[in-house]
Length: 121
Image 1 (cartoon, rainbow, N blue to C red):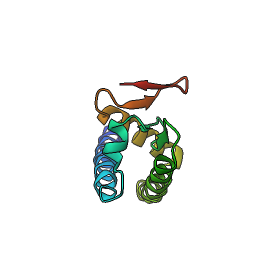
Image 2: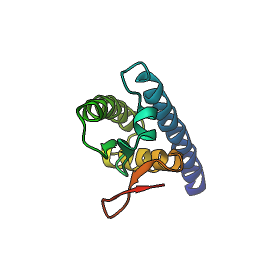
Image 3: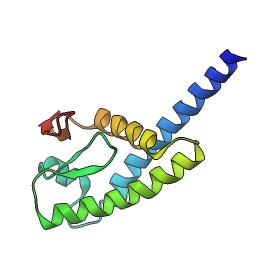
Image 4: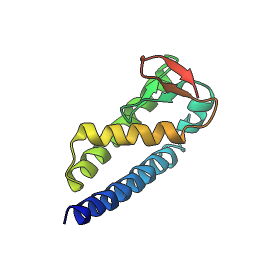
């Protein structure tokens, strides 16, 4: 019985990780029509991924701040729904999302490390 529960939990976690990946890809594409896209902002070093699953401002500018605010609002809504569906806490959800986002961040783009500093991956 314990083995069955563990297998079910692993399967649920894998599905959740896939959903988080899709959310990150979708949020990148959804904002590509803006004056500056997430990809452009990342390439320019204006924004980066944080361990809490949200986008952060690396170099202060009104355009970067607006982008981050809009992206994070959408991410929060999505994370909240995924957390509810998968019966996990928001903290667990954002941690998973952060790990996934940082893992997918391209070399040369910024991530926030455990010390709270922006570093190039």
